[in-house]
Image (cartoon, rainbow, N blue to C red):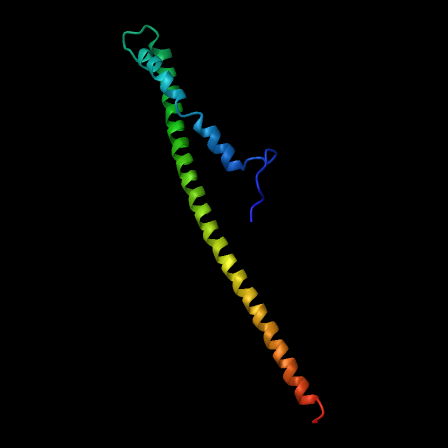
Length: 124
């Protein structure tokens, strides 16, 4: 069973990564108007514009990939949590079954001891 979380409990590494990735989604969107201005063929600084455009498109691509990875990671975390819940249920069932077996073994041991006692006691 996982330890209860307190205010002093550090978040898991995947939670930190997801939080960091969520903060990057809309930063490129704010740069797109600049990109359009720099891509204007009538702009005198076309080379600079092209360079910046390439960089921004690269950033956009990287952010889209990281967003996709974040979604995939989130899905994997959810699937893992569901699998863990199923495993926990199985463990609890096995634990309950083992406890029942122990109780039956105690009862059988008691009966065997009684029968053994009757068999070895002098006939009276």
